[in-house]
Image (cartoon, rainbow, N blue to C red; front, side, top):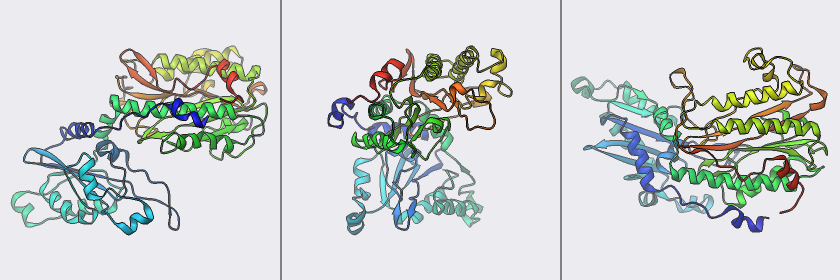
Length: 456
């Protein structure tokens, strides 16, 4: 199967263009005063142990506005003579370090290939940034990422020098720009959608590969390795979040993370895994019988979750509130569990958030935004009311049912003991209706039973 990866995945879309990064910057700067400045910092590198680092991934806001992925970097923007200019402070070229750690774009590369006007070595940061801060009235900066920047900004605000006394010059406050950037990121451009669609296709194939490799006796981590190995093989940067691979009772643990148990012949395996491509996440969950054949009890719950997901996806329409998919999924699940005799309350009682029985078996939200972060930015309830869907918004739809017989808080029906099922897809809101980016990932009972354990 891996030999045919290119044919299965297709060609990668073009990267986000410099023109688009410039457009994003302009939209942000249009909301900021001409005597104010913007500072964004890359994430710090983190240590795994001793001199071994965790794989590096920069702040999503930095990626969104510049496309810059390198560590030890700071973006700075100010308005000069009525025109906004972007400066990037970066690690300089260093032959010895590059021999050990890999090539750096350096100052020259930043000026050549990225959406910036000026670039300087990171060592010049304090002097150049300090001068600019002293001239502004407000600093747009998210504190807590880079202590050095926090110190420079705080020192400038607290400074009570002659210039401030004479002219009132110098910054008087800090504002976190994250909320403004989040509103921009919430609505995806066509180029962003293509990155996400590509990640979704790769993740869909990886899930199908896991289905085809499933069999009794396989361990969760062996199946995890197939999925994550394909992510890398197909050209992504790897997983967008740590994979959840749980079989049997482990599938009833929402964020199960050990992924090391053997899979029993009559058990359902639940896999929540997605790849990241050029910073953009995909997020898929599929559940299937490890031996390729649903039992009657497994089939009852699986079809119910699938029906609830389809009802939720149908609500992903322009103008609908964000909670519409969740309420549609809850209603279908409650009606189904009443028919199966699991819930003894009437429909409205079962849906009550405090005392309803549905929450015993379905205890999480149906959706979250997705984009540069797998749980992407964007307020769900501006002004206290659910946000209305707009074209270009992307979200997951992931209802589930979890019957863990190990739980002391509920009386689990023996028929459904230790069955955990979640089905998750990534959905783009469009003017013509929901566009399921992950639609190529099999999920009907017939599809799954025809695939599990079968080679490509």
